[in-house]
Length: 134
Image (cartoon, rainbow, N blue to C red; front, top):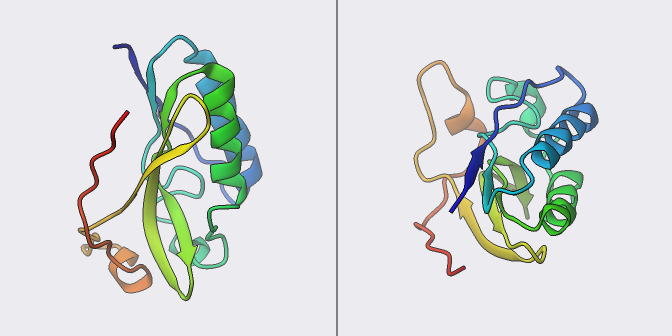
């Protein structure tokens, strides 16, 4: 198995441009069986003022783009995480996408960070460990 781990520099205040950067890096990782993105890469972990206004549901630009990209590069894609809005709650969520663009798993972070972080104040913790069958 070939795995690519990608680190992305956030374009401060511009989620669309940051997503474009991720797309470029993922395309460069073509040939990997699994591509892994970092935590809260699309807005930045410490950008607490952006968590709620830029939260997305499953139809948002981050997941939609990554589903299509997994198909394009024919790889499993771990989305890193992004702030997900589900009902009236917000989560630090990550997804595993198949090379066919299907969602195989959704994990919501269980241990929200406290020290110098507002993550625990703004987000709801997940409630289970996830194992995905590939």
